[in-house]
Each structure stands twice: as structure tokens, then as C-alpha cells.
Image (cartoon, rainbow, N blue to C red; front, side, top):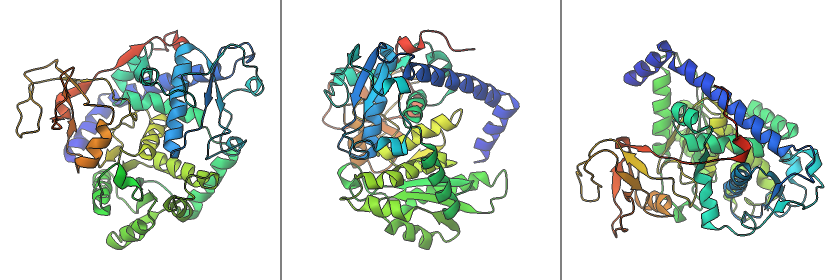
Length: 420
């Protein structure tokens, strides 16, 4: 903790934090302005459009990430997203407008289908080749983004998700009222615990595992200022864990929305429109927290993490995952590049001879397999030497000896360079 504090202080004294904050603020404003301009054409009837049908039958995060994919494709092609959410089980018919702002401007509400692309995107054909394009970062922003942010993909996706799912004033007001009623205030750690249907996708984790990261956060915070009240916001589909935390950690003020966790616990209710506010409020309160503890194998957790990036210059280190690293579902990130040799110290550890070796994820479901069969996040992740045949045994490698590589493409919406 002391070393982390020393590094933080050196960054402050050296002006690094000020520079990063300034650079990321400029980049955020540039991206938001370009998205807003594309989504608000003067004449939507003549504007090139990409129509997406939001009919994802799964959890709210799956639907959000379908919309994210659609926006990435539209920004790349220079087309306005026309989102049809009438078949989304969370907001059927015209329910979207009760919670979220329109994704496109007024001229698009009754625009014709002229110059519109439909097939190949959410609601039609989830072709792997087209979905994989979500990994391409815009060429004009990649240099300042990679140079100033610890998780560029999460930041990029976070800007889009935060725009596409902007809240109505009435929704935001209800969240503020909920915060006031529950005593939600800073500092606070957000904890997401998913248990009811989690066994299909990931290993079980006890409340002690989650709370160990919460305690570590407050221990670090106490080095710089006295902590008068240790707060933790718990979003969960298992209400029993709230009482368990209160019993085992009595010195914490535990805040949670009893209504949303009760709805999430009921598998017959959790996916209906009546549960949408509880789901959205939980995600936003997790994203607003000063630190997030969760399992990144859960899309709910990943959406909260993405929204955190839209709230801060760099929130890449403001979260701890109990199982896997951040990822986009079913589309493995590009390979990581090694920085130094690695000599294996156990049978399933991957070894390599020096820097420059590319290591890729071993398959589309690698993150979910890892979450289910590798109990803890221990600094090792599943991988194999790029382009090598798959091995029967899962091999893992130390992440700290590698760096992420990125795919880059030209985006019509970002044809000009951002301000320097």
C-alpha cells in the first residue's frame, strides 16, 4: 500500500496525472461530439442509417452489448443508428422512452428506410466476422488513447454505452432519491455478487473473497485521510448475502436496493420490464462507486466497469475482478505481446524465449471456461502461443510479462484528428 501511495504521489508531483486528465478530457469530448453529430443528422431521411433490432432474449448486459456492437459498426461506416427496441423484453413497445433518452435525433423518429442497412447486425445475423470488428479502435484516437489509458477497449466501449443509454431526467431523479434514502455517499465501494444462475458460467465465490478487496481499498484510503464511515453498496441477485455481509463485517454500512435484489432473485421476474429500473439503478450505482469489486465473467459487472471509464480520465485500476480480466463476450481481444522471457514454474504454465512473442486467448469461450475452472484471479490467464494448435490442457501465463496489442481501422465518423 505504501509503495502504491508513493507511486501515486510521484505521478502527482511529476504532472503525469494532470497531463492524463487533460488528454483524456479532450479525447472524451471529441468522441462524444462525433457520436452526437452522427446521431442527430439534419435530414435523417437522406442520411445513411444502420437499423438495429434489439431483441436479445438474455440479461440486460447482453442487450447493452448488442447495442454497443451496433454503434461501433455505425461509427465505422458513418451511419446513424436507428434502434428498434420494441421487441426488447426489458422495454417492450414504447417503454424505452420511459427510462432512456432517444438514441437518435427527432428527425429520425419517422424517417424512411432509404439508405438503410439492416442485415448482418443485432436482431438479424450475428455473424462472427462482423461482430469481430468491434475490436478495431479508430485510427485517429488510438495513439492518445493507448498512451493515456490503462484499458483502452473498456474506455472506448464506455463512451458509446454511456451515450446510447443516457437516462431520462425522471430516471436520474429516481436514482438520486434512491441514493438519498439508502445513504449512498462517498467514499463507497460497489460490490456485485451474482449467484442464482452463476454456477453455469463461473465458480462460486464467498462474501469473504469480495470483502477482502473492499477492506484493502479502505486500508489504502486510510493512509491519506481518516475514514469516518466505511460504506459498501451491494448489488446482488441473492438477498441473503446482504445479511451475511452485515453479520460478518459489522463495521461497514451496507447499502443495497432490496427491491432490485428481490426481483433479480426471482428468475420469472428479473427479465421483465418491471425490473428494468432496479437493474439500471444498480449498474449506475456500481459505476458511480469509488471502487468496484465483482466477477468480470458477468456482463453486468463489465457494463458497470465500462460506465466507470466514462466518468473518470482513467478508471482502469478502480476495479478488482475475482475471476477473469475484462473482455467483450465471445470475441477474444487481440494477442498480448511478451516483454521478457518466461520460464515455466509449473506444468500448465506457458513459457517463451524472449520479448515480442504473441500470445492469444485459446478460443471464443476462453474467459468463461477460465472463470468456471480456475477458481481465483491470480495474475495468470489462459493463453497459447499465437497460431499454435490448441492444447488439450489449458495453459496459463503471467499477465505482467505482457502488454495488450490492438487492432486499428479507419472510422468515417472520426476522419479528423482529435485536438492535441
